[in-house]
Image 1 (tube, rainbow, N blue to C red):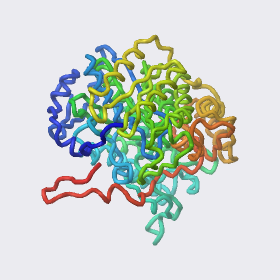
Image 2: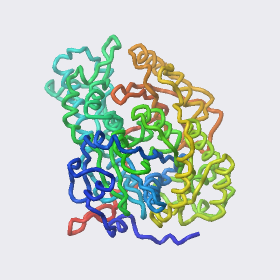
Image 3: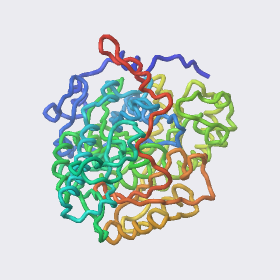
Length: 568
């Protein structure tokens, strides 16, 4: 067991020596005329960079995913950044691409999204607090459409939108459970048409998913126009284009579509752009950032949200369909504590101390929870991509427990490496970097899980049985009606995004490991025609989280000099 004394992430970040963002850009071939600086260390990259870099060689494309996480997460962002830094230590040039922080989780129990320890994106405070305002642009565009939907109803409803069918809610980048379900339009006749609605968190907005999947400003404009806000009495979809809101939304989003350029503590380039939730939406950073980053070095390392059954499956079947990019390797992050949790012997709750038994040496528990790691390895192999198991090292771990994880990886024929990037930065990720280089150089056979023209039910059932290990799918009557309606309206060729708990491969968050003998319950199906996928919703997927009993916001303040203190 190693010493766990280390400064906080904020303390480490403030001691880092950062380069001017123009210097970081120059290192990856982006000229200053393609930058819009936001201070000395952050810049937006103009979309002209996509064409300007198109003739340069393509980097190897690596996706970082994970085992099913515990409530505290297992360090995918930290590993993504540590691996990018580690590539430089083994003589490769790498760029990282990660999602932008939502201030809901930042001020909730999760804290920030800049990585951690000595593998962070910087500047730390800017990344976690507003950055360049993309989240606010998404919020404003989303709520502009919501306002115009209600105004359309008030002004006579020319398109015949059925008020009870309106699915477009409002959005806010705050954890506020009191706004999940509300009634709008109360008051006088001048205050609008009364109807039930509510708020989702901005990261769950379809506008956020559109930002992440758009390939250009024009593509984003078309996607915004295709948003379905509800249906007529005859069952015909009503779109943002028909409400005449899409143009205004595109204007609001004009700057937000430009990716943000930052750096790690070791000055490795980092593209930070878009932040769709991984249990609700497809959980990946933007396509346009990847279209730029794929031409900026030897490796582009991007992160997919939550476990390989969620973020990686959607990375392969949704994001890669849009971008046309083919992954060369995948990294599956695991931790000793995660596999012990998947043994079923421990209960872990966010905001509470880890159980004492979890921290005791017990390689047997690691092996018992290894079923989850094996299934997530299988989920990557299903897509013809070579995985590498990355063990994100914690001070409380034991060598015998690392040996147990190596045994699991060896048993299915994949590489593994213990990585100490949290404590040691890029120097602690060299073994992982070497393993990823070797994996990426193997001949690839990437394949989608299902063809685009397969029926929607077949796509859902393929994901449920092959990725989740379910015995089958049960559809509530409303979900079946929606599937029939969407196929009748020409949406049957869209990929599927299954919204479910991220805490289990199954739809039941209490079931750990690799559950068997269960069926996936689909209670609702929605069309996200703008984003370009169909939502199949399983379980109670609340998209406006509430603050925890002890939110991180209680530990954040500013001192007399205006400096942030306590942020973690």
